[in-house]
Amino acid sequence: MSSVLFEIKDAIAFLTLSRPEKFNAFNREMALLLQEKLDACSSDEVRCVYITGAGKAFCAGQDLAEVADPNGPGMNVILGEHYNPIVSRIRKLEKPVVAAVNGVAAGAGANIALCCDIVVAAQSASFIQAFSKIGLIPDSGGTHTLPRLIGWQKASSLMMLGDKVPATEAERLGMLYQVFPDESFAEESRKIAYTLAALPTKGLAFTKQALNLSFCNTFEAQLQNEDMLQQKAAATADFKEGVTAFLQKRQPVFKGK
Ligand code: LHQ
Image (cartoon, protein in one colour):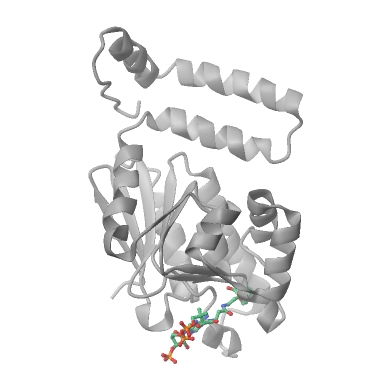
C-alpha cells in the first residue's frame, strides 16, 4: 500500500497521506513520494490540489521511530531533503492547494497544512506545534507562516508551549479558512476543491505568486508586482471569457488557459 495515495479526477489531484497506523507520520519514503506526487500536479490536467490524511489523523509530523533509528536518514538531511522541498513545492505550484485537515496535524504535519493556499478543518481536528516538546524548533516554514497568520505573540506562545489548538480556535485565530462538522467535512472540503478547479487557474496562480512576493516586499514594490502579474492575467483566455460572459449576462466557462 502506497504511503501517498494519488488520483486525478475532474481536474483535481487528490493526495492522501496514508500511514494511518502511525497517524500519517512522515518517513523518508513518504516524504520523497509526496514530492514526486506534487511534481505530477504541475500537469495541465490538474487545476486544483487537495491534500488530506487517511484514517483519524491528518499528519503527526516526522515519524519519531525513524529519527531514533541509527539506520534512518539522519538529522542532517531531514529538512533539506524532506520537508523544505515539500513546502517549497506547495508554495511554488501554480495551482491552488487545499489542505483538508481531517484530524490532528502536529509538527511538520501542521506546518505543511498551514502553508497551503486554503486550509479547512474538521471540527474534531487540531493543530500542535509539537516541536518544543522534543527539543526541536518549528520547521517546514512554520516560523515564517504562523506569525504572519496569527501574529508574532500568539505564534511564539503556541510554538514554545506546544498547546493543542482545536480547529474552532484555529479558525478564530486566523490560522485557517473554515471548519466543517465531521459528518460533512469530506463533502464540504471537496466542494471547495471543485469550485477552485472551475475558476481561472492561471489567474489563481498569479494571485498566489503575488501573495508569495508580498511576504518580503515593500508596498511600492508590491504595486509593481501587481502591475506585472495583472498584465499576465489579462493576457489569458479565461480573462477574455470572464469579461465576455459578464457582458453577455451568462455564466463563464473557464478552461484554465
Ligand atoms: C507516531 C507519531 C509520530 C511515529 C503518532 N511518529 N508514530 C524535523 C526535523 C527532524 C526530526 C524530527 O522532526 C522534524 C519535524 C517534526 O515533525 S518534529 C514533530 C514530530 N511529531 C511529534 O512530536 C508528534 C508526536 N505525536 C503526538 O504527540 C501524538 O501522537 C499526537 C498528538 C499526534 C496524537 O495523539 P493521540 O491522539 O493521543 O494518539 P497516539 O499518541 O496514541 O498516536 C496514535 C498512534 O500513532 C500511536 O501508535 P500506537 O502503535 O502506539 O497505537 C503513535 O505511536 C503513532 N504516532 N505520532 N510522530
